[in-house]
Image 1 (tube, rainbow, N blue to C red):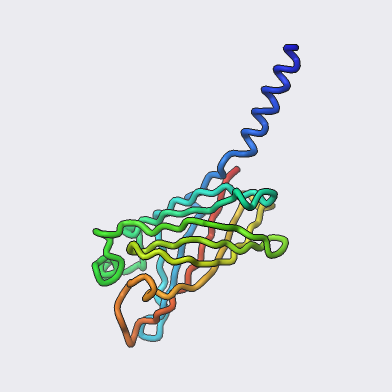
Image 2: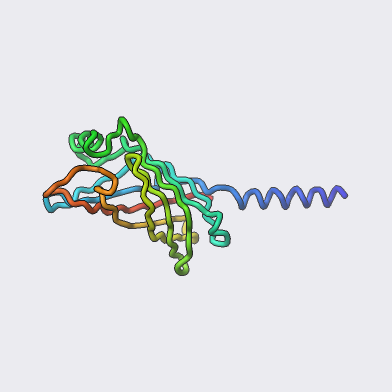
Length: 178
């Protein structure tokens, strides 16, 4: 009887370990963007992003990838520009300190490629978006990558401009430890 109890406890422990949320490797996770301004690309990054996930290819219906980005962590390597981007006409950081990304569905497309549906909230404007992600579970750490485009005007970021593109290119590299 004791042997059965020990085996049950061992089995529960193993199942619990496999069901744990994956842990973000913050040092190697990056959320970068670029946008044309006066015909030249301006590159930037958000240095403070917390991503949580529970990605399981055998249970996509219960899998998720969610993110919270601190807007004041924006860095374009130009302090004056960064300060302007935090003002009311762009991100309005005093009123809207975070960008939220909450996944709603993950679908497999091919071997390592998935379609991720999510709700993206910027400045309290919520839009449904779909992004393609590439998952490499064979690498150490596990890596999830995505590249997609957003229209900044959809989220009321910046006004009309003849010199600033409406299209922002986003690149996410999310590395996690098991």
